[in-house]
Amino acid sequence: MASSTRKNAMYNVAYRLFSVLLPLVTAPYLSRTVGPEGVGLYSRAWNISYIFCLAAMLGLNDYGVRAIARTRDDPKELNRTFSAIWQMQLMVAGFLTVLWLGYVFFVAGEEKEIAFHLTLMSVSCLVSFDWCLMGLDIFRPIALRNTFVKTAAAVCVFVFVHEKNDLWIYGLVWSLATLAGNLSCLPSLRGKVRYTRVPLRESLKHLAPCAVLFISVMAVNVYRTMDKVMVSGIAGLEQNGQYENAEKIIYCLSGFISAIGTVMMPKISHMQKQGRIGEIREHIGRSMNLILCMVCAMAFGVAAVADRFAPLFYGEEFAYAGTLMAPLAMTLIMIGFANVIRTQWVLPQGRDSIFVRSVCAGAAVNLAVNACLIPGMKSMGAVIGTLMAEMTVPTVQYLLLRKELPYRRYLGYTGVYMLIGAAMLLCVRGAGKIIPWGGWAGLGVQVLVGISVYGILTLLYWKLSGFRPGSGLLRKISGGHGKKA
Image (cartoon, rainbow, N blue to C red):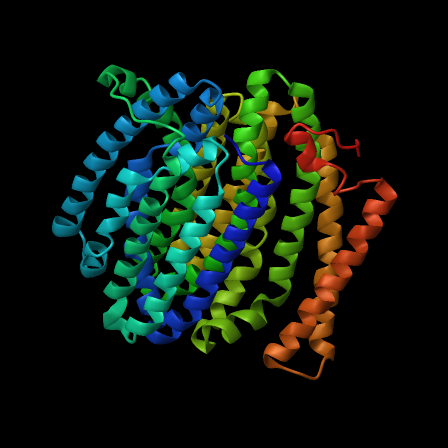
């Protein structure tokens, strides 16, 4: 029934890489076409729509994956679980679609036209089955079909969007692409699960645990979505446009982190049911080492070149986005750390309350800091709020789990890779002052310097510590026998 973890990881990471690159292809065009205010206006409409979609899906992207992974060995139970969850999804998503239309017609302001054309985002939640496919370890159709759909959407952007008044077309294209992507995955469920009518009470029993996870999902998006709403409302659309483009780069890079967590959670959930706790602990240690290596490289790399990259990429009007991007990049380290604990320890064990408490604490910190700092510091206040929020999440996890997991070892990994990242940053900045070229050529040289310095220092650390990243990480999780690091 399931694909191998190695193939799943390959498909999912490749798809995430594509998802990272695609917005980076269309974003410069949109920025130059509609300017900071246009980007800010679209950002407000999109993010409000996204909040409705999150509510429509509740916590299914975590709960649904786990529920399917736990029942996939029993076809009868699998079909009942799938059917009950989907019936619940139809009720909740249908209700939220009606609420969204109420918002569009009676509440929305200057973003009303764009918001109306984003309605298909809410409709797509009725037929979103990623949670089922991921729970069954089926990642290939999600990756391939969504890649095709998103490529077509990107082409449409370049063909049909030519001025600020075309923003509604931009919204329609991407919301239509979301719906088409969800529908394209339906054939992959054939022969894997079958819908069977179940009593309403059986569907409603999934509502409470989903709602618990939804609290955490919503809390996370308070400081990933509401901050933009607050910036646009308090500091204006131009500041929101700068913040949107700064965060876009960071959000894209965080896709690599979530790709690994997405692949591993159904496997870990299955292992948890089999009682293989020792293997899970070992796997978390190896995952933490690799994830921290990756996120520190991205964080310090972005911080090193942000001031040169932003005006080159988005245009001179967005030079300030580079100033925002440098500190915002540090959130990648905290996101990576928290993601490993969440997807490989907390959620597979069904300890949702720990996840909820940590992200709700982060959301509360974010709202408080934003309210205090955005009026005076504008978009930089939102950056500080996001940093404080992302730092709060792993801190709360540590306070709740410090007796169960070897946090001292994990913090040791963090310190080492941050030192390597800091050395890379200094070398990249130094190279930027020495090299005679400007523009993309100069940026390219800085990137090569950064890759070389980080790569050499990391390989030296791995040699001294005896860590072997290719010695069976995926084999262990898929049932093989890799060597212990």
